Length: 457
Image 1 (cartoon, rainbow, N blue to C red):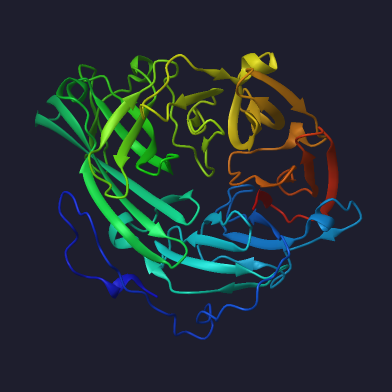
Image 2: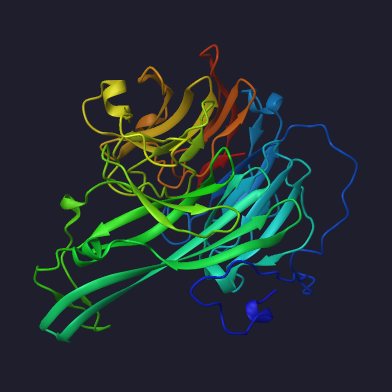
């Protein structure tokens, strides 16, 4: 489906509802029309995903493969899997790395294509095991709201939320005699029904910085990882907050003519989250942490999770400079609890900064963390958010791993599933029993030049 389905003018400052039609692809070489649901399959499939090389080893821009195995296969060190021969795995249609999500039981994958001719198209797949994924129900076009490169996650079971943001700098004068005015950050948000694919609601709004903050050069360059709170009456959206020096010396791009001011990131007041009412997506407000000052927008992975206590635990620094903080948003106030801070570097006692690249809440205040140290290597740890402690989980690949593109950690019962492959090298599925501490080096994973595995669902 090409995105000429909708050509009418887009919505104004705020839209509270929109019903969109769906479409089928007619080209026989593309994904076939949705099939009816079969009888229930009791198998708990673990989907593994891999990112393909485009031009540079490890760039992940060549697309995404998916293949489903069982728990028994995952823990079997004699089971060998090579998904790189053509046709051996599902090839997601997105020309770059797909932002894949999954149902809690692993029976369905959800994808919004990222860039390309069909960027912004939502698809749902039934997981039938191995390379067998069947597209079910209707496609949904989110591009008219979120653009062709949307960022989105499963924000609650059965609910997806996609987001995008643009900025526009206002100034007076002609370069080089220019005076900074402000940077307007305009966000777009869409909520999706994942059970019966459709758009539930949409909104567009200017990020509500105060006049003083705008004059100081604040803006938001990227938003991501929206999550519904426990009560499902708020959406928390992570932000990569930026600040320029408005009295610094501006520069002008020789090609585009764009005028910009030097960064003043050192003086950012704190980590920022956008809070919206749900399901209306109205009443945007900003909440600020005084415990951290780094981006909480993630990169390819969900970094906000609801704990057993109902509070939201949020990692920072994933897409900035690798800082190791987890913050807490109070379920009662819908604001930061600025008495709480989990510091991974301190908990591990490492010599350097242990940057959280991906993590998953497990239960009983425990979490599973994938991290690097001073932006190198790839390491695993079990953390206790209540006690503030961490236990490293050693693997032989850790010095050669890179988790920058890692998307998902699979959890089923007592088990955590993580495929670990250095770029271009073979690896294994590692299965960790988070209650006993036992780590199993399981299924062997073949690899191809420039590729790597990036997730489990």
